[in-house]
Length: 99
Image 1 (tube, helix red, strand yellow):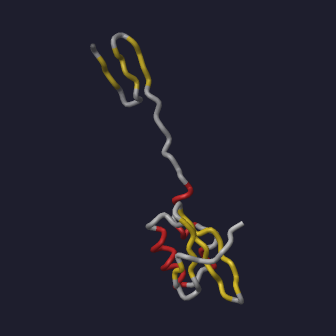
Image 2 (cartoon, helix red, strand yellow):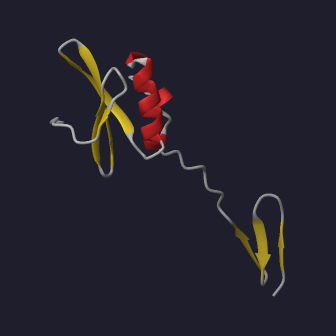
Image 3 (cartoon, helix red, strand yellow):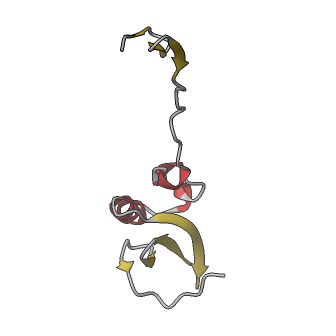
């Protein structure tokens, strides 16, 4: 069986011309860096460090909730939800209800 290829992905195999489809790169927005989140600018510096650390484990910044004048960052991944206080403290067992 004889085959040839060129730069366009066209192949001649056994007398038949076949063209391979080139796949477009897959853009999964769920794995965007936290810096691209609309909430990023609203985080304290300590929260940004904590969010960046948790991002390595698949956590995504969902939103920021204000509780008694203090901002609480809410993140989740496939295993659960965590919150981060303004001081950067991570609570992996929060008592929070997400609607």
